[in-house]
Image (cartoon, rainbow over all chains, first blue to last red):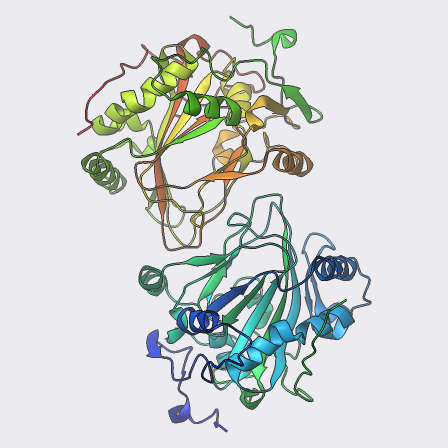
Length: 307
Length: 307
C-alpha cells in the first residue's frame, strides 16, 4: 500500500503552491466488458469515455414511492437521527443533509446495496465495495444554492487519504430533476485529467467546505479550458433515475430559484482495496460521517425488489 | 388618462398589506391578426397565449458579429459613457450593466428601432412605441447571480407610474444561452394574472432592488401555484436570438457557475398612449435611466440591414 508521507510515491499531489494538470494514472473501468457484464457494451464504453452514466427506469413505481416516503419521514425527524449526522438550515430547522444515510434507514441501506446500482459499480471497479460516504441531500426550491465545480477525488485524496481513483458515486434522484432546478452538471471526459489544486488545506476545512468550497477547486482559467475541451452535460430525469459518476469527473450544480426542490440519495462506493490511509494533503483526516476509515466488511449486494 | 392618486381607478393596486391575485384588465395583443401582420398566425397566437415569443435567425452573421463587437467596445470603456449609466462589479471595474444603451451607441440605437424587432412589437401593441428603458446586460461566468421571479409591470406600475399592461420587452442575446448558463425562465400564461404584492415600497427602493428585489415579488406559495399551473419554460438560443415578452409575464433566471458568460441587449417598448404618469405605489418615480418619463417622440422604425 502507498505510504502517504512519501511524496515521490504520490501520483496525485495537490494543494500545491501552483495549480498543475496531471494525467490520470488509474483505469476508469477495472476490467474488460464481457457478455456477463450487468451493463451493455454501450453503457460500459460511455462510462469509460465520459466518466458518468445515467440509468433510467431501474426501479418500479412502488419502489420509487417507498423511497420518497422514507426520505420525507427521515427529513421530518422520523429516524431519531443524532444531530451530528444532520445538517439543518442556519435560519430554520429544515433538514438539508442527513449523513450516514445507510446507518439510519433500513430501506436506504438496502438501496445502497442494490444489485441494480452497486452490482454495476462492482463490475466497473472489479472489486468488493464499501461506502466511503452516504447521505441524503435535500435542496428546497427558491433558495437552493449552487455547488461549485470540483473533482471529489481531489478532496478525498487530499483530505481523506483515498489512494487511487477507484471509486464511483451514485446519485439516486428522489425528486424530478430538470435542466432548470439545479441538476448535476458534469464535464464529460474530464475524469482523465487531474487538476492538482493550488493552496494549502486549512485546518478543519470541511466545516466550511461543505457549504462553500474554497480550496480544492480549479482556477477559472482551468475550468474554462476544461469546459471548452469537454463541454458540459447535465443529468436530468424523473425520480428514481440513477447517475453513476467517476470520482474524478468534474461536476457542480447551479442554484435553483424554481419552486421545485431537488433531493437525492448519494452513495460513494470505494473499492475495498482502495481503503483510505492518512490524508495526502491535510493534517488530520475528516470525520467518519464524511469519510469511512474503518469499514468492517464489504457491502453485501442484494437482488430483488427494494420494498 | 388615469389619475394615479385615485385608488378606485387603479386596476392594478399593489404593494398592499396582503398579497392578492387580480385578473388582467388589458388585452395582450391589441389588434387582430391579419395577413399583413409581421408575425405568422402561429407566432401571434403563441404570444397571446403564453406571454412571450422566441424569434430566431432574424439577423445575418455579419449583423451578429457587429453587435458582439459593439458590446465588447462599450463594456471596455469605448463609449465615453457617463458613470451614472454604468453599473460595475463591487469588487472590480468590470461592467455589468449599461443603461440608456440606445443613447450611447448608434448601432444599438438602430437595433432598438429595427423593423424585425420593434416592427413586430408595434403590431402586437397597435400603437407607436418609445423606449421605457434600454440597457446592455453582462453576466460573467462562474459567479453570475440569479434574478428572482417578478413581473416587470408590477414594478413599472408601482414605481414608475405605467398605467396599463401595454408594453413588451425584447431581450436580444449577445452570447449563446443554454439551459445551463442562467437563461431567462418564463411562466407561460402567467401574464393573464396580476399578483398584487405585499409590502410598501421603501424609499429609493431601486438602489437595492436592481441587485436583489425584496418588494414587488410574489410569495413562495403563489409562485408555486403559478409554476404548477403554468409550468416553467426557458429561452435558450444562439447569439442574435430575440425573446419578446409581455410586461406582466412572470420571469427570472438562475445563477450561473458555468464558465460561459451571458449578455443581452434589453429594450422595453411601451405604447405611446401608455406613457408613465405618477407612480401608483411609491412616493417618487424612479430616475430616467430606469423609466423614461419624457419621451420626445415615438421611435422611428427602420428597415434594412443593421450594419
